[in-house]
Image (cartoon, rainbow, N blue to C red; front, side, top):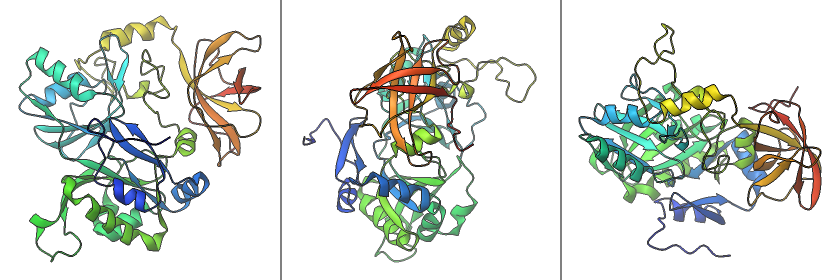
Length: 390
């Protein structure tokens, strides 16, 4: 099957370089091409966990909220309290609708006093934010800027980025960022206006160390890729993509894949990133932080009848890739939820998955059944993140 790219689907400034480096498979994410594999998943996993990889993640499109009311709108859109988010800081910030259902789970970045970015997962947050801003009369502009993330992940990621940009990146703390303009390859030092403008953030969608470089001029995509690629070769830098086995092992939520249209943050296992409490004098207090869906989330949490996303350890041979959610059943054949993600784990040498299960079936060590590749398999629940090394 060939992926046809037309006006409705964007390519990123890095797509051609990713293909030239060996990416052979792609999908569409956020109406944008996302390279997903070289065809050698074992090598991709080793590079991510033992060296470093470069990922074209320009599909993580940015929603920019700018203007006098930008901070006020951001705190209303996001279920995590952002009132203390300072310039140069990023924060994982789930968003809900008025019924408490997840709309997206972006990373929020405060670029300056009146400008924020939402680095989004796969849903149309631009439309949602514009609608909320318009209905609420907020004095803001909601736009999509010319900004394209490029990730470097892995235990040698710091060495790669430091070699490319300078040792100052080693001082960046997790979820902190710096804006800079780096001289482009082949351009004289000091011509900053002609360089590569970017936001360098210590973050990324893996359980490894890493950085996301938010390119602020799409015309400089190949220059940025080449800069990192050349700097990274002594450290074993390879090409790759967000890695499904590693992110399941580390439990990083894939919005829209691990979740369905009715999933709330508690069900998705990210309830700790939601600021529901009023002021109780504690360090996590969120006095009068009003946000979309707060009352509904409180009611859902109080009901105690919610589903949960949990880990599954599944018996049998390595399974075929999961193309759609599969029914999970009790030992007597009663449907109790759906298997949302599946991989063969190199770390644990086991088949592992993520399942959204009804109560009480998500309790740890519950034995269930799931049919894969025409075989009925035993599946045992476990808490997240996976801890099978013991």
